[in-house]
Image (cartoon, rainbow, N blue to C red; front, top):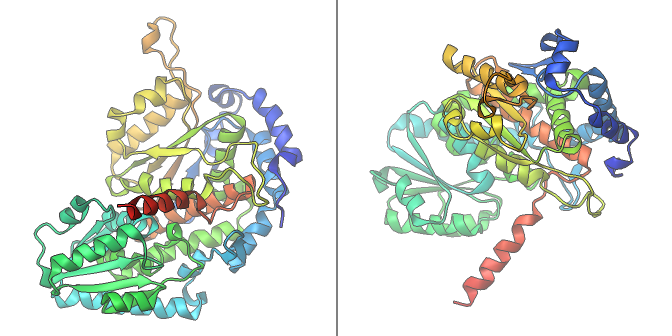
Length: 468
């Protein structure tokens, strides 16, 4: 497997020269009016329009050459086969197996059946009216996003992640302990914030609530008093775990059948990622556009702007997925990198974001590439998403206008058009970003599946607390 520096690739130096001479987005459209049709790729349920990126056909060809030089095809095959791609922890990162359907490992199919049976009983018997998910990071952000986007109201599902007591208090407002289920999600069953909330929940319940654990530490879960334990595996990273038992609360919120649709949508993208040629491979193109913006055009941040309230939590979910995965300063061989890796990711739902920070996007001193996500939520939202992308790309430089009313333009963006925003469509979207992150990690020669940067702060906090 290729673990050399990307800067040693022939395509890297050629891209650097290309960036120095790159045309503006307006010039690119003037030279090739058909790019609005040609710089579009399709995956199941998704159309990806990257015509407003500052790249042309020769640049795209070089980016694909860079991916080939970096061995993306070999790394992709290893990922999808469950090989050891997490080198620092000597593990696979086989989250795609969680949504592989009939081809999934037996332990995955067994767990999904258990989840479905349990969630079905909880939703149908009416004894439980509140579910509170206790988890943090990947044990919270993914399930919270899915539940917020797709919950059908059959049962009230809430989430408590922060150790601040107010977070748990809000999740329990109006709840009856006897009709409340707590789902404690922690791979080790030792996560400080989660276990502090779990102990607080036990005190609140007075022994009347039911607890389910999602963990690999069956012994600790049993000692805690969990009525059922659903498994977690070391080959599934937290930020890639929404498809697993970590997503049990989300399954309760939308129902087992629609959770199956979520998995099916992600599996369709897995097959697309595995088979589509690079120039028509949507997650690969998303990754390459990002590499072009970060490493050759100097962008330091990236905005994600979903024009759908159902996706309002997507930026927070992607912050962990992208920055915890690729916010690395050493490569797979332990060498400090001399190039930028993950940009700072941020964003919010449109159109509310337009009345918050789009001023900076249009007229600020930093160029912020953006992803617009258009999900068919009405003509007004669709028009605004299109208008924002056009304004960023082309600006308005009328000399008759005062300077403060001019827009420089030449600010790149892509648009993801979702065929529908349902469980399958959300599965499509989340899997696209997962594979984008992996592909960028391959380009940058970093391990996208560890997160050693979070450990030191936890160690120091324990030391501080032990002195008290």
